[in-house]
Length: 138
Image (cartoon, rainbow, N blue to C red; front, side):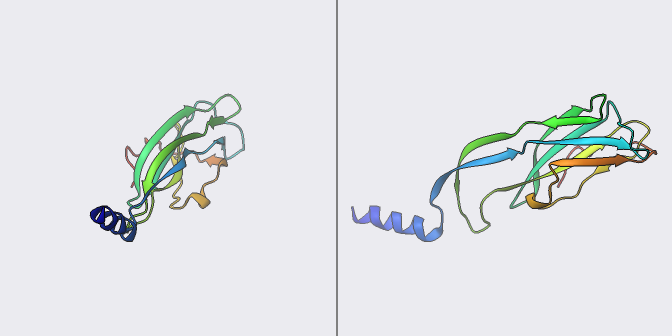
């Protein structure tokens, strides 16, 4: 019994106490994609990219094409997880948009904090050279 208390004390002091958390992996969100004349762009590829700290690596990516009104929508994805607070902190998600369409410059947001994410983005694409969205964000 004495050793059990020592082990429990070490776990508590190290901050490694596991706890359940309901994480938002992807927020309910959508975009409207238009050209510089504010006409909707149909068929643009919209990527919602989820990354997380402490390291900032990409965790997932979902892609949808815009409809005739230039809109693309994403449903919320949530999951129960077991986490433990470590020296680097808990896993924190943030999201970015990448939008591409042939004949238009690719749009890529540069959020590093979930509070910066625009879940109802209005994106204006300029005519120009198209590039594919990067395969992996960091």
